[in-house]
Image (cartoon, rainbow, N blue to C red; front, side):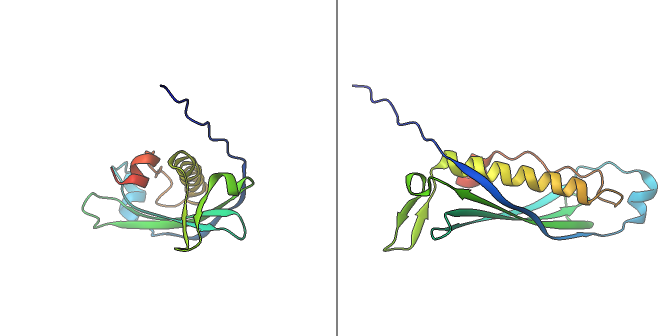
Length: 149
């Protein structure tokens, strides 16, 4: 017997999309040579779920290096993206006893992808005219990022 899987329908909005901090280190060599590099990134994304506000937040921290050995630091960006899930009770699994929350993987990957895309755009806008103006954050596979696979 084949069971048809339940379709997951989420209703959400973006409430906050902002830069928490940004720094670009001036690099004279990079400026003179019009250098194009295989930049190296340290990416950290933390998810927080707030049951009382019905929100899911993603704080992204990205350090940018000019080289694979991470010897030449160019700068960083830290961003916050907050999503309100209007049908929170239908989407987020809450275990009050353990104070544990869970998002279905398709929902978490969608929100993480949106959050990181927003971070990419904020970096492009903020880094204009700096040593990092040619840096474009990579495209992430959110499922791999979330599951560590």
